[in-house]
Image (cartoon, rainbow, N blue to C red; front, side):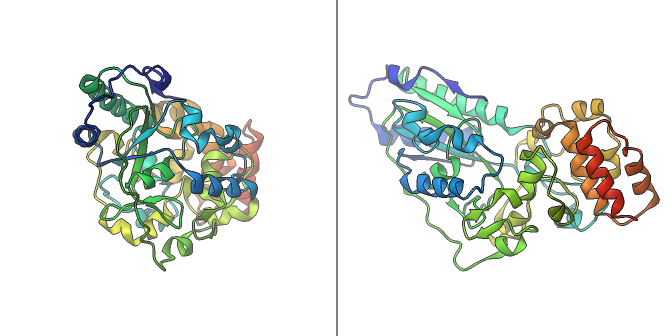
Amino acid sequence: MGNTQKPSPQKQAHKTEGQDFPALANKIKHWGEELGFQQVGICDTRLEEAESHLLNWLKAGYHGNMEYMARHGSKRSRPNELEPGTVSVISVRMAYLPAEDDNPEHILGNPDQAYVARYALGRDYHKLIRRRLQKLATHIEKEIGQFGYRVFTDSAPVLEKALAEKAGLGWIGKHSNLLAEQTGSWFFLGEIYTDIPLPADTPSTNHCGTCTSCIDACPTNAIVAPYKVDARLCISYLTIELRESIPVKLRPLMGNRIYGCDDCQLACPWNRFATPTPETDFLPRHKLDSITLLELFAWSEEDFLSNTEGSPIRRIGYECWLRNIAIALGNSPSTPPIIEALSLKESHESKLVREHVQWALEQHT
């Protein structure tokens, strides 16, 4: 798990006396935008409402096999417990939506093609955003001297969306993703926990209204109520987090989605305002935005490791990669090439792969 800290907040050495914190906050936002963040916001560390929502979500078992969501106790919702001395959080967002040669809806409507969540088409975002946040922290250090901080981007028990909402970066929609006016939801989040008492921004207000587009669009009905997602039904969870057999009743609903799912975002009216990312690292690699299922199913493990180097996809491993594609092939129209490709992996060394290949073949007989 990646993070950066220098030094820890409890060892802060910066001068607070006479410091113009509002002016410093404005400089931080300016520096952040220069570094490629579309927005920078600041909030305090109080997350009582978000903590209550998290505890109820965990109690309902909606986290499935993601035991890490409960592992750290209250550290996830209480920044000062995770990093003692933290009094402010600098929250940032960075757009990732690539300019599309072939739009997502068209890919989803073509059962021969593979659908990969838009965030995973390019390079892994963790290192890029961490490096930019580190540069932002360096700017602050040059301005006020040594201070306590720690950098995060989906890399530790942090309630990123709740913090971003408090910092005015957007509101948490009914699909549980963060939404921003004039921007939509196609962006990554990152944070700097710091001991600097910066003035907090005004939290975002909710603009979902009576809209239920995301709920209606979910292929597996994973959004069981507004603002409540049962991960055990979510295709992103099934294809990425789950390392076991995917429930048979959910397989036909997955279509050609082999890594993640964007349906709730694609359906959201606010995303009509989204603009493509300027970051070249997030642009599609290895034709992942237009490649066929059969091409991907033919990748050897060596091909998989080579083609997913520096990609978030690599973390699911080759076995789950084949599992996911086998399901998508089972959902495709029957053709001799598909049946042949599946038959070639009927005796695969992995029991998990064999099970899903057999299921897929049964869909074609």
